[in-house]
Amino acid sequence: MILYHAGKETVKYPEIRKTRYTKDFSWGFYCTEDFEQAVRWANRGNGDPVINFYEVLGVGGIQTPNTSD
Image 1 (cartoon, rainbow, N blue to C red):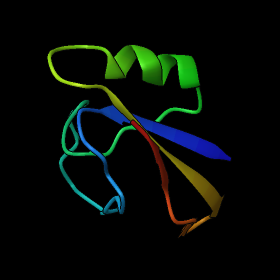
Image 2: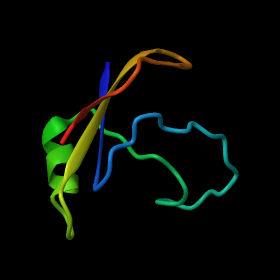
Image 3: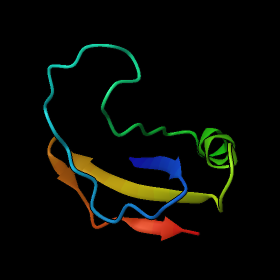
């Protein structure tokens, strides 16, 4: 499965953490399977958009990420 993370900077190695903060849009690393949604997120606000993408190999496994600037 490919997951996309949109933002303004490259995230080569995302940190996966377990947290107890329970509000929506709290700490987190938000991803989507929908490339078009990632493009919309990346183009919000100022700065150059970056779409990071990762191949998820299964529970607990993420292949070395690739990045599209």
